[in-house]
Length: 106
Image (cartoon, rainbow, N blue to C red; front, side, top):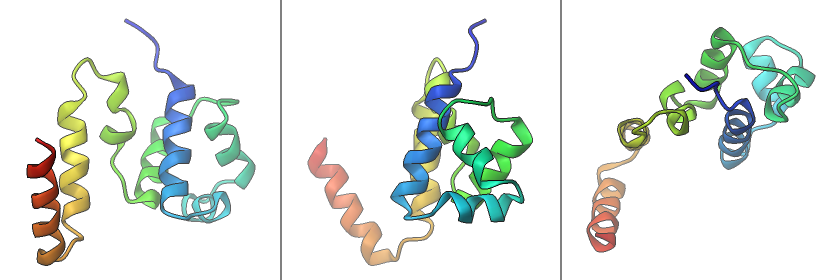
């Protein structure tokens, strides 16, 4: 069994955080850990524990599956679940626009 790629996990957490315009301080406060610990996770200086990963994902409003999707042999189901998770917050009009885009991309 291969080890988890904690560097990739940290990078994905950082990418999600930045895409949502959230600071490390915001996540640290939400998870009740030090800002430096968030930085250490994102920069692969420490391995994130499962409980901390779950709390960070909750603060980022994302799923652990999505963050770990590249660790799976078949990551498509995790990505599909994340897409569905994001769609729930969209209005019907936005969902229709997304559907048109998806159909155009196929």
